[in-house]
Image (cartoon, rainbow, N blue to C red):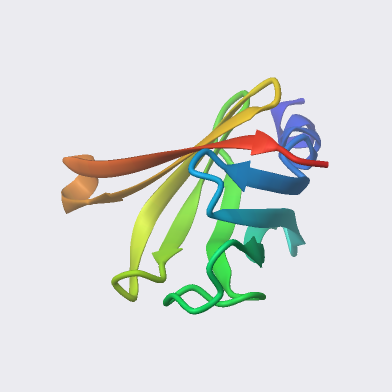
Length: 112
């Protein structure tokens, strides 16, 4: 039964999300059996991030309202272990290094 709930949970995050700083929007959609997030809008298109750049990869269900996968940071060009947590219309993404000892989180709100 839990195997069938994973894809349903993953669809809840589908859509476009606005970063809390207002600097960008990311569109989440299915990519195979996982979710991926691509930059859909940038307040400053001259920075290191580029429109259409995939920054969340292989995000797979990891509990209710939670996904785990990889997150790419255009600012430093590195890929991190990533998680997403959905609570209503609020999404929190985190990228971690050193086995989760150091993490950076970003909050998003649904914009569609």
